[in-house]
Image 1 (cartoon, one colour):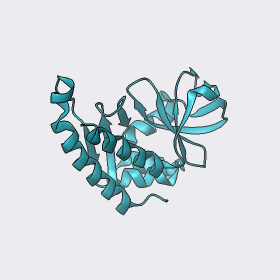
Image 2 (cartoon, rainbow, N blue to C red):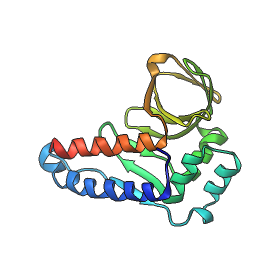
Image 3 (tube, rainbow, N blue to C red):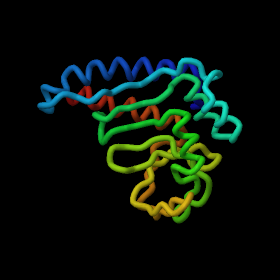
Image 4 (cartoon, helix red, strand yellow):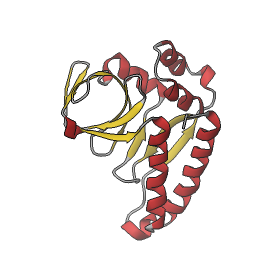
Length: 176
């Protein structure tokens, strides 16, 4: 299912509602208070230089659509932690602070847009827009060299990745 502004807005609302439930029981369950868990809405994508620059670089349309609605995601207490970078941070990554190619089990261009709390990177793979978690590889220059066991599919596209986050939160709320 393609990503859209309406779907993304609903996703933000759903995550926010589930976070309220999850975090209200967090300290009682784990014995310590949660960190700050937020999904920050974008103010206006047309005014953000990072989004414009990503568009000029022909970054996958799903990611541009995402940044039209969402500025960033920080969920340190969900699963192993889930962090989606801001458009500006993704741009900095493309310009050398993150790998921009993958070699090994897969070969091609990647756009790193987030990470988890265990050192894994979330990346859009090539033109397909598939989202994978990359871990255990070697980062040499702009290249991330990784074998098959270091690549985990997180969704056929960004929408699938975001639905996975929603499901992880639902499971966390159900397990109380």
